[in-house]
Image (cartoon, rainbow, N blue to C red):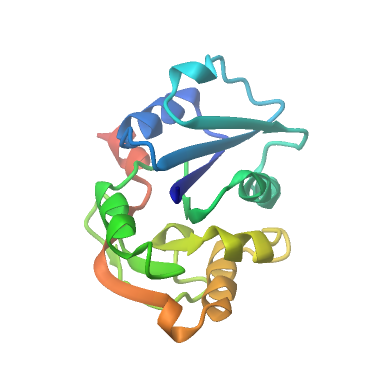
Amino acid sequence: MNSLHLFTPLWRSPENFEKVYQSIPKVPDIKWIVVKADSYTLDINVSDYYNLTLISIPISDDRFNLHHKVNAAIDQMSQGHFYGLDDDTLFCPNTYELWKKYGSNYKMIMGAQVDPYGSARAAAAPTPGVTDGAQGMIDTSIVKKIKIGSFINDSCADGTFLLRCWTECLSHERIIVDELISYYNYQVYYKST
């Protein structure tokens, strides 16, 4: 069975973890992979969370080690699509609908993104420094081949990653849909209101 693999690099508060979890549909074809540094304390019983895989790795817990978290999650993925879900936002229900609609026919799906203030990033081909990592769903066979680079060497590593995956696909294997695929920083907004 193909799955939509949601990846969350955990480094913000455990409160954020719970809010992200609550936003994810509890369906068998969504798998949630959370990766944290060993030093991050998360006092949970993994079996209480539907389709959760929790990975703990021995790294310092900062954004410069994010690529280690991403690549550890990629190693756990089975057939399906990869989707980045940061721990400062919420899952967009339309993401799942787009995956169900296009996932069996396309290796890469790009869509629009909105922040809680109404600003939007248009659905477009990936551009480092412009496109957010959560604007794309990517076939796991591609992400396993490419993986993500270090944010130390590339401050736009998620955009570069998307671009590398995009160029790996043939033109008929990728699609840009003018529909909402993700939220951006939704928890930041809701904490301040």
